[in-house]
Length: 122
Image 1 (cartoon, rainbow, N blue to C red):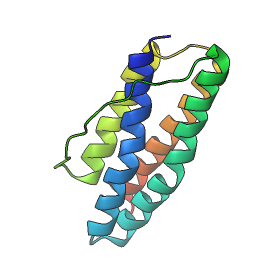
Image 2: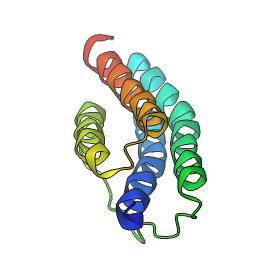
Image 3: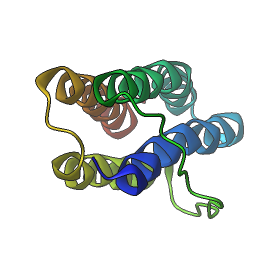
């Protein structure tokens, strides 16, 4: 297990809750407001489950997280699409135990559902 890779994955997804919360507060679209609210409400628990599963499986704490995060100046749909790619690219470097990958699947499902809502609901 590469602790830096895992820490970056966990840290970026925790940070996505803050970014989407800001987007939620700034949205002038009701459907966008609701979709982003659902995302930030659910992502923390899902990411926490991945972190706890990895730590329990490997018997080690994840102690290396990103020190800084950048601001995001894209639309909510573009941001969620970037997260979709990030999760897909990152998952191959994460632990491959099926239970951990299932937790990552739950995150991917939330992101996909949010993309659907942002792209098709008004």
